[in-house]
Figure 1 (cartoon, one colour):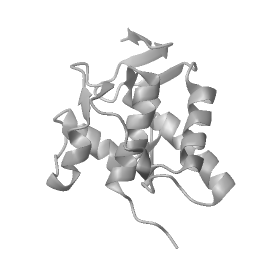
Figure 2 (cartoon, rainbow, N blue to C red):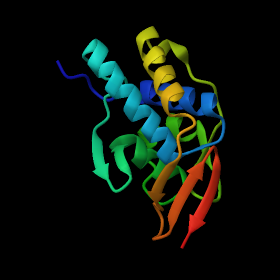
Figure 3 (spheres, rainbow, N blue to C red):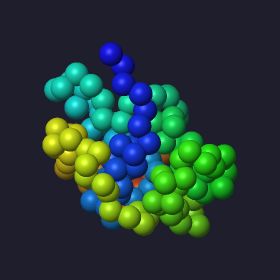
Figure 4 (cartoon, helix red, strand yellow):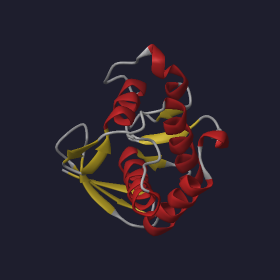
Length: 151
């Protein structure tokens, strides 16, 4: 049986990841979540947040979660039903870096989910990602939390 997307589980997962990483951009958060979901699916046969991943230039993106973050940074719709998610995060003026405003409610994350997320963080935390800007045509290179923009 396919589970439905659960806003509180998605919020807890993204808060858990963002609190563990400290300052992190959307691409890094999405990549960590993607790898955690992939590992959880391989080991346990189900996903953590049950979002639909869409293929984008910089890799897979969780569709509903991405739309909620776009609403937070005011380049998308802010839906009332996602208000608890939207109030849990702030996006810096650069439009990329996410700041958690809360700690996750761990009741929404299973032990297996936390293990999968921790593994994904450990495997990918220090990796550099090169990606196209989500807002423009410049290339962004991220190295250990620092950003270099090449136009």
